[in-house]
Image (tube, rainbow, N blue to C red):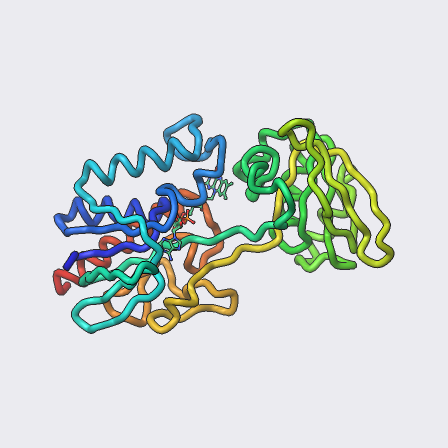
Length: 304
Ligand SMILES: Cc1cc2nc3c(=O)[nH]c(=O)nc-3n(C[C@H](O)[C@H](O)[C@H](O)COP(=O)(O)OP(=O)(O)OC[C@H]3O[C@@H](n4cnc5c(N)ncnc54)[C@H](O)[C@@H]3O)c2cc1C
């Protein structure tokens, strides 16, 4: 039996592991893929305080090295269920195994929705991105397209219009769904061109470099092409928290409805990082949650 089991080896989960282990708790972290989480898709991280620049995979690797050195056990498994047995929890994995822990921290992050077009996986982090705040600066004075029409897409359009020479916004619906103020801000930008009722049909590449998009107008099926150097997908985020819904309340969007304290309605069950309800999903906020959740788990175990 571990003191703390952590589900998800992204920045939030690994920070929780570090804090738990430094508080002399036995800690095991269970990750279904590669340690590091979403950030491993980013070629450059430039907003991690104290480091001018590093790749997302270096960031993930360094965190993984740090938790291994701190004595954290790691398992590569997919968690499919967590059972509450009162004094301890049972974390069930896809291969039929299980682990027991006095406290559990879920830090399963989010998945950015994708267009699921051919070649997309290879382009992610290399022409196709999810975060203008993080990656927009690489497209200074270049042409980019934003896919989506909600608040995130509009915020990204405003930001990118101040960096890039040309910004296309491709929205499948006949109008934006984001806030009116943001719509007005986007429509007032001289270098932004909006295509409503239009979907992306294909990424156009030269070699392995993105150079444009093939579009199709939904109503009449008219096809067209645009040239662009980068694409930012803002078609929604997808938490995968349903399997844990018995232990913690989910909000309308599927995020854990927990606050900055990372607590849930189940004693000994904590949530951290992008998987919980919050306004800003970044490395800094994820690692902050990891620390808060781990210290809350330690207090729970120690009976404070
Ligand atoms: C391309 C890209 C670039 C970005 N660039 C920046 C940037 O420059 N600066 C910045 O601050 N932020 C950036 N972000 C955002 C940042 O990466 C996230 O905010 C941060 O990774 C959230 O950390 P997390 O640990 O909460 O979740 P995640 O990073 O999503 O990690 C969750 C982990 O849980 C694992 N997991 C999920 N379900 C299970 C399960 N059932 N069983 C076991 N394991 C599971 C996943 O495999 C994953 O490894 C970027 C995001 C992307 C996608």
